[in-house]
Image (cartoon, rainbow, N blue to C red):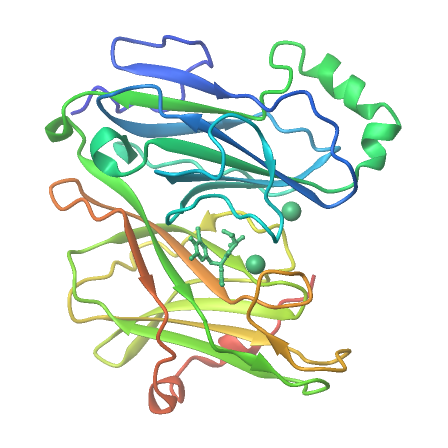
Length: 329
Ligand code: IYT
Ligand code: CU
Ligand code: CU
């Protein structure tokens, strides 16, 4: 049994000898226009190894469309918030996503005894919080003030993170992210269906998926992720990327071990476009992402993996038919 076992604690600063909470506070800015992305970095407030064991969102439903939490070593700025839309990203080095909150989607909880490793020896010395402010008319209509009133205890604190500090051998499971992404998809204008397929052989220690997240821009219809073992396809998760892009619960009991194949398909439509659409950062471009949030025995501790291979045509001939069925929104 671990001292980090009980995850949800009241959001006080010190919760017990091992747990403490950090408030990720956005400065009191009003975004300059609708669809603004603002980012803010926070040093992980410990020099020891620590584990994130809980996330407590308090974001405003009125103004925040989504928020994402990343970990990395070198954020774009260490002192000020910045515009992290398509021009500047989140980090100079590789960022790893750890949390997603999206309006109208239930927040994800980490399973008991599972934590994201952060701090000195993890390469995650900073948190970067990205907030997508959707409709800023809410700010104009002074709903912002109302939000401040209803959130009197936590003004401008969209997210609280509960950390646990203790020796690694006392953390039973670490959380990690396996990202499948397409790098080469081209969507032809007017073409009704384009599939982006991604697949990799899995050659590492066993992982246990517990949540998944899909991400495309406007043309994505459905994104599905699978484990293939002995030729059989087992669904990890399937979602419309047009629904709130949060982490949703993964299919239970689909673990991934050495010798398996991990695969994903994004179904796009080119209808309504007059030119080719490529993978890229703007909303006129597209992306195809399937994120698997997993836990694994902390003795192995591999917190980040990715797959960018297109997989073979032969393999995807056997993908279950559901992967091609758009999810109505
Ligand atoms: C080209 C692409 O698909 N970019 C994705 C996936 C991605 C995420 C991270 C790529 C890298 C990363 O370090 I974290 I390199 C992408 O940008 N996805 C967005 C966010 O940036 C995370 C998303 O909402 O999923
Ligand atoms: Cu958003
Ligand atoms: Cu994107």
